[in-house]
Amino acid sequence: MQLSQENNVEFGEFNKLTLRFKDKELEKNYLQQTEPFRLIQLRWAVFIVGLLYCLFSVIDHFALPVDMQDFASRIHLFQGLGLCLLIAISFRIPSVAFIYTVTFLANSITWTNHFVIVLTGDVSLYFVEAYFMLLWVWVASGFSFTLSVKYNLFFILINVLVMQIFGSFPSDVMIIHYMFIFASIALGGFGGYMVEYYKRQSFLSYEMTIQAKIQAEQANRTKDKFFSIISHDLRGPIGSVSVILNNVAKCGADLTDELYPILCRASKNSYLLLENLLTWANSQNGVLECKPRNFRLMESVEHCMDLYQGSAQQKEIQLHVNIEPELYAYADFEMVNTVGRNLINNAIKFTHQKGTIEISAARVGDMLTLTVADNGVGISTEIQESLFQVDKKTYSSMGTESETGSGMGLSLCADFIHRNGGVISVESEEDKGSTFTFSLPLGAIGMNQDAIAEKIKGWKVLVVEDNPLHQTTTKQALQGLGVEVLIAGTGKDAVEMAIKEMPKLVLMDFELPDFTGDIAAKQIVEQSSNPPLKIIALTSYSKMELDQKAIKSKFDAYLHKPLKSIELLDCLERVETVTT
Image 1 (cartoon, rainbow, N blue to C red):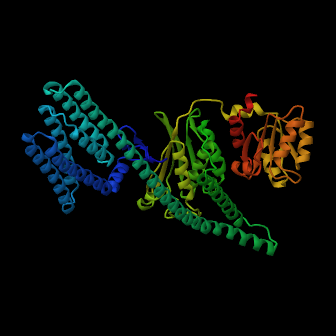
Image 2: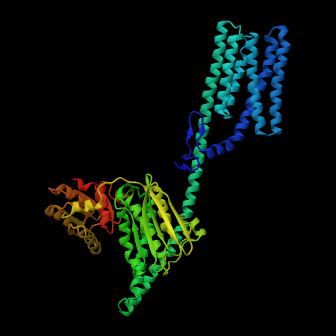
Image 3: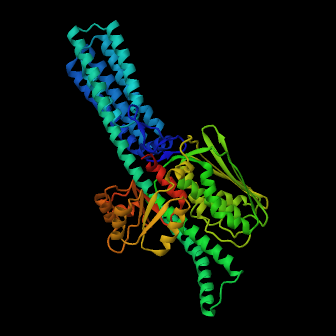
């Protein structure tokens, strides 16, 4: 279900008592699309009542006393022919208001005849039957269920009062008369309610199918445009790196001071682009779940600063941070990191040499806002309008030193901030700089990552990884936390080392030379006399992909390569290892 932005209600939600869609636009569309059918039903309802009155004129001629035959039959014949004539005219005057008026008139005539019956003491119940047919058809036609019920209940009340005050019916006849009246409103109302209910359900199913089709077509167009942007922007830096490395290999020379920073920037931009691409794809496929928790906002900012401090120093840009140390957010830590990385990276990219970037945060009610402001090149008004849309490339321009990028990071930022209950905005003026601001729910103070890092110091951590490069990067990340690192290259070695060394934590790759990581994890738990507190999958696969490959795997958590110490601490806090 989607939310209607105008009315802040779920799409398709309707009041089951009044049979009205809460979304005003949807209610309007329903009335417009079903109006032709409802008008046909109304015409038939009035036409049948007209024929019924013509039939009553014949019955009156034979059933009533001689002195009343001519008057009653003429009145009923006039009423019947009049209603049929009005319906015939409605085909020449296809006015909705005219048809509604004729319907209202037909119902009023029936009630008038009821009053005549009550006042004259006529025991004929033909008009009650006529009213029953009219009410049922009128309500069932979907003209207006609530209006019809209210209107007829009002007249029923008047009819009962008139009968009590002026009626002279015998008690048994009066009871029968009451029974007919209440049966009419009950059966007519129930029949009309069910017909209208299922009509609206059918309409809603059709609308949701159409909406899903439109959204799917829009998503396909967005993905096509998006991947064309990515392929273009990814081809450039990777192609440049390939040319440079091939020339170096052919000439046998070392990298020069001029080429080294170029390669660093190209590889870093390519990595960020690929990481954004994978994150965006996971978010679109439903693989990426939003898992909010309390965390210190400064931890996220420091993580992003560590990544881009070198880039800022190369351009002699000053990074100023003004955030209270104990300011907590309640959001998905990794999503906030992604937003921070993109905003700080963009600020550095579009700020001139020796510029300034301000990063600040403030509490606003039950939310907090984080701002990244620079004094760089700024953004034009036209580009700002499409800044957070993934299928437009107007905002992907060159940096002050020809840095490139796809611009997709900003659309990812908007998506992630929205998922965490916040909003993102930009204020910018060309040649004066840009200010990006996003909000997050305010969090509560809890155990921060410094406390967790202190808790795990001295732990034995077993890393099960067969790739030497990943062994090195994982070991470096863990050594910074003050833990003792053990390395196993196969599943068999991992089981033997876990039994012998009894590590507190195991970081397990899934693809191993001899057998898969889930089998190794199972054997460690079963064979070790003192099994690890937690076994965490450290892999390039997503959680969904792991579940598809090994449904019975029992990993306590999932981390992606390459390992980052801050992500490990965040993971340990989530799985509550430190409380054991």
